[in-house]
Amino acid sequence: MNNDKAILTLDIGTTKVNATVAHNDLSNRINILGFATVKSAGIKKGSIVDLDLATESILEAIKLASQSSSATIDEVYVSISSVHTKCIRSNGAININSGQITAKEVSKVLDMVSYNANIIPDHEVIQVLPLKFKIDNTTEVENPLKMHGTRLEVSANIISAHKSVLTNIKSILSKIDIENIKFISNGYAAALSLVKDDQKKLGVMIFDLGGSVSELTLFKNDSIIYSDSLPIGSENISNDLSILLHTPYQAANMIKNQYGTLLPLNISNLDNTDTQITKVKIPILGNESQTSEIPLAHIQPIIHARVEELLFLIKDKINNSGLENYMDGGIILTGGLTNLKGIEQLTKKIFTNIPIKISNPINIQNGYIDFNTPTMSSSVGLLMYALDQNPPLQLDSSKQLKCKIEQEKHEEDEQTHSLKEIYEEHILEPIPEQKKEGFFNKFFGKFTNKLAEVI
Image 1 (cartoon, rainbow, N blue to C red):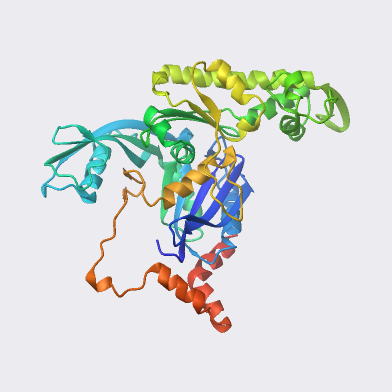
Image 2 (image 1 turned 120 degrees about the horizontal axis):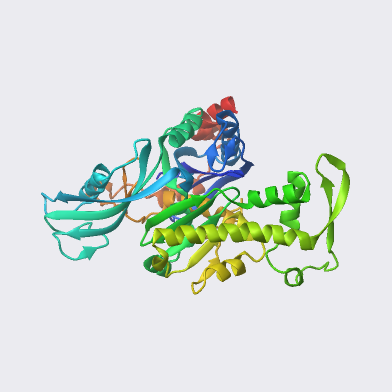
């Protein structure tokens, strides 16, 4: 990717939209050029329910993230919730006429996997993730590129998504002339940012506990083995508190965030500087000018019951999938609900004899946002998916092969300046003031002008 171009990532959730503009710097490290978080509108339980409101929030996030950068947007990467995806397994095989396996043959055999699969009619393939390759019916290989043989076989998992969901997102982005869009499973993006290499080999289950949806993803050897979701999240806790305490939703949400815990009160208050608080005043639903005092002891059981129910429903799904023995790498907890005190302890009580940990994504250093929080897992994973210079083999949503492509050096290029040399020349010879305006307009004018028109 040229240094004057950038990618945009969109993590579209029920509670918020995260937009990030980034590119690889001259050392191939991810460089954040802009970031914005906007409260979601028109989105419910991972689905767009009001296109106009959703368009407004998504475009606002893009505008805010883009305004600090002069780079042009080259590609857009959007995560798709497992609410809208399916994971199925399929196989493919091709003959190798040339004898050596190149990127062309790998792309062809992965495309054959989709052709052989029974894709749901209203679904579209967004990722083809290989599980194992075979060459000439011999032993399995992880990466067949540059190897020799006459026949290449592959077993892969296919991630498909509802066409209507993809079409709605394309429609929103078309308003600012963005057409080069790649779609990625939200669970896959989160896994990229959370799972370590040793866990990949063993298999690890990710619980992404969000605002209104909890997603389950079993990740092993750079592929998704299983994914599912439940329409339950932290918003359900706020609803429960609102109903049972007879208080407006906003007040209930405040109580959850400020006083919510899954631990017994005598334990959860040990780190509280004001351990004398035993009651809290809340407005009365329908008559907000009046308040009532609620003991904190009444709040903890309400929260505990809802989270316990969620975790047992997750356990039932895993048991019914028959994949409980494929989680030797443990369980990773991520998402906004992990901010609730005691979530790790309660999960360990329900899922016994398995390592469980709340994990933060890889923290990409930048001057805009701290990524070191569970709510940023998908956003970081999208950046890694888009900008990784040595990605795992797979087909993306445009049916393009993602792999490390080595650039061959030709004699006629020996006198061409490297990107680093060009960069150093610009440092030594700054752009004159009278040319700056034209320089920035060249790379950013069209995009920002169109975005301003829509906003």
